[in-house]
Length: 515
View (cartoon, rainbow, N blue to C red):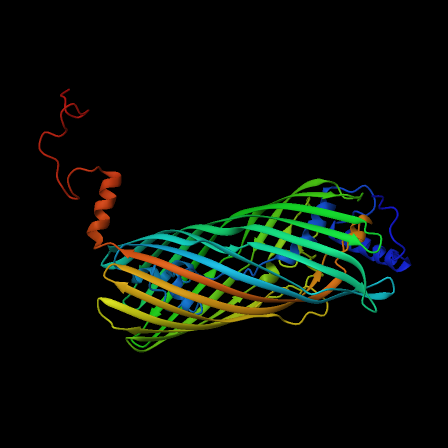
């Protein structure tokens, strides 16, 4: 197909739009003019524009079905193995070794509506469409080992936590029409995204006094995610087909620390946690394939530094009586500090990682998150049943269009727990909804002209259900932990504390002979 024979609807208005797009491209690519021979940064800028449509929520939520059932309000309670992901100081409350395993599953549906763009001197609209997908994965795994040091409890923990899930699978088919409802194109667009950001952590907590515990976590952050987007456009009435496929692979890694404190009184508990900012190496590999000529290169590789922002949480838990807990968390996230530096080369403009725009143009904002939860315990004793409820309000940092209003993710949660002896299982369901106004990248004519621009603005209504299941097992006592350590580091024979027999080694052993 000869893209030089673009239908007559590509008018002087389109040419003016391309000029505007060139200016956008110039800003994003650090000075390269679209339409000329371009360096790799231009394709990376193209990819950043596409990627902003599939950005997840970056708010860090702790692990575990029990906290999830309480809406995530767990910072002042933090009395099980998931404590390190909320407030590491809570680990000092554990008195028996335990292992914890958490799985989660997500079902999400996106409704795209009221998308339109002013082009060629007239209003062009894009038909409504719906996409949905399901995903499931390991959320958290930990082994926790408490011990006594100077008469107080010291707890160590190693853990894996999948903090942010990039899974996304959308399939959309819709029409592009002009005034009067005349269709001028049929479009099909897909986005396949997978991967996550997870941590491998070592945590320690110490019971400083009967009331006060302190804790800290050292975490290795690893992020690996990729996405593929495909767009096909059937021009009407010519029935010419244009297609585009863009792939991007992202990787990121770094180290950070979290510190926490927990103060406990008979009827009130107060907790606080602070997560430090840090910079990690960020790498992006991109590729583009089309059935028409574009000034973009077919592939590129860009390196930079991604800065993760500071965040902190303060929580309060009220215990009217032993069987009932009320909790609240208030968190602050400095998302405007989440920036990509030196992307594509030293001296490149800083970009917001949230909306992928230069920081001086970005509308990314810091947010404050509020969470509420309650837990009521039935049948206290050896067979324990717990009922949980929660609610949360999570403003999203993305303001992707000039007319965007503050969009929030709101939801509620329910949970159920059962414990018998050393074994416990917890279930939780979180339901959330939010509305987002975004810019949509759909017009392939602009790509043909080398324009980095998203012309259509509209609304996406999202409904999300997330299910958690946690399994926890307590070892019988600290003696069992000593036996494990003895087996791992000493040997299978004897028991901890056994003294070797006089004379030393065994027959044939290295220490059995005489000098």
